[in-house]
Image 1 (cartoon, rainbow, N blue to C red):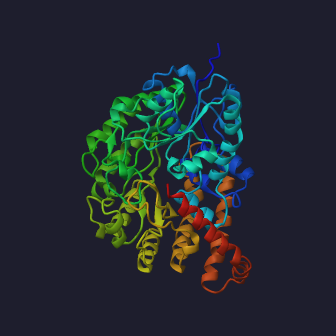
Image 2 (image 1 turned 90 degrees about the vertical axis):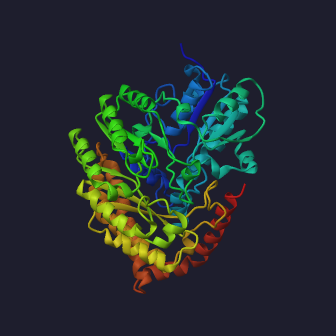
Amino acid sequence: MTHQAKIVLTSDRSLLTTYGNNLYMGLAASLPTNVCPDSLYYSLLCPPVPSNPDGTVSMATPALTTAESIIVNRAGIPREKVKIAHPDFLTKVVTAETKILAISVMDPLGLGPSTTTWSTLFSGIPHTRVEFLRLMFGPVRELKEKYGLKIVVGGPGAWQINRISVADKLGIDYLLINEAEYTIPKVFSAILDGAEYEERVVYGSVAKPEDVPPVLTPSVFGLVEVARGCGRGCKFCVPATSGKMRMMPLEKILNDIKVHVSAGFKAITFHADDTLRYGSKNFLIDEDALFTLYKEGFKTGVKEIFITHSCLSPFVCQPDVIAKLTRLLRKHGHKYYGCQPGIETGSPRLMKLHMAGKPAPCKPEEWPEVVQEAHKVMWENKWVSVGTLMMGLPGEEKEDVIQTIDLIKSLSEYPSLFVPLFFVPMEFTTLKGMKAFISGYMSKEHWQLLLACWKHNARYIEPLYQLTTEQHNFISGIGITVLTRLMTFFLDQKEKELEGKSRLMRVASHIFANKLSRTTRSEENIIQKAYKV
């Protein structure tokens, strides 16, 4: 018997993807349409997750799988009445019995750091924005008009549409901001009872780890949440607003891993903002807690365990623990490992001003040495760093950018990748009232930093893709090669322009000067306005 869904969950097409079986390819989702057309984007970089014959999916984003679990385990809705649908087949999954269509968003208007960087650099529209609006003004609007169901939007990117006027234009009935363990049961129960919830914009409070239920559906890449927050207090970071690091109970984590193993996953990925500090009560690794996490995880039958984020200080302060962890990983077949640290800047002054807790227990004044030593230790253990940087932080000066350039150049011998991003004053952060940084504000030094990062990346990106991707996707590999070559050419020309040697870039700059100026002003107005409720 086929059960009709009372609640249908979905995301836009830029999120429900396998990213060519490489987690870091998720950065490609932020490219604008004029740099990466649909045909390349969806076939090479962001192929869709597999869909079932009934239009549902067998894996989804962590935000969707968490929402499903909250609905079933905390709101008490039978699981057969809750379905996660592929956006292309919404009209197949949503029926007259459906009362709620819930949409999880990550970067719906393309205002996140990565999308802002690429869209303003190339004067283009991010795929994330295109896909979200395509979803909302297409099948979502059609289904709402047909069945009169309620549209609920939440997820990590909900802050971008946190205005009633925007919600009205998009046909959103309720907007859930922040963590949803306590808000989903209240809002969804009211809707299912035929009532209107008292508020349209509902702010969730920080959830206790014991109140986060185990997942029922696997996540893309086998992402398993092990903690929330980090307690380091970076002023531009949303997770920093939730306070100290909250560890998920080991029982829940193992339950989540088993869900993935039962679904045929051979590898899972521990997700947290500072994963190696699982179980720690300070800014260092708690060896017993971390090794128990890994060892118990491997006992579930999973073959490989990866991680997402980690700060750099443990590599400097506890290199022996890193080496010991690496030996454990080698026993389980890991030849290489990696994580995504936030490098942000090479300036001790900016570190002290905006993120004094990031180097802890080291001092902000020691940050360049911490980054250098950490990369040395990482590569000695064959760990790959995919580090982010932040350009345009409030108060940034020329010397700060030069120090960051010098830091990047000092890391040239270590196979790694650097992702420079523009500062975005995200809602709920300490810096929410500051001005967003866009390409029109870039100085010569900012361009030099971008060039330094990309030259480094161009040297290592293809071999690292081959080393770190378990199931090599030949087509995605070609896409990476093509995009790398195009970006290298563009930035080579930009470097010559900065040196006064590129006639091609000077002519292009002259032709498009007025257009770029108008685009800069337009993007600035759009971006600044979006941050005000």
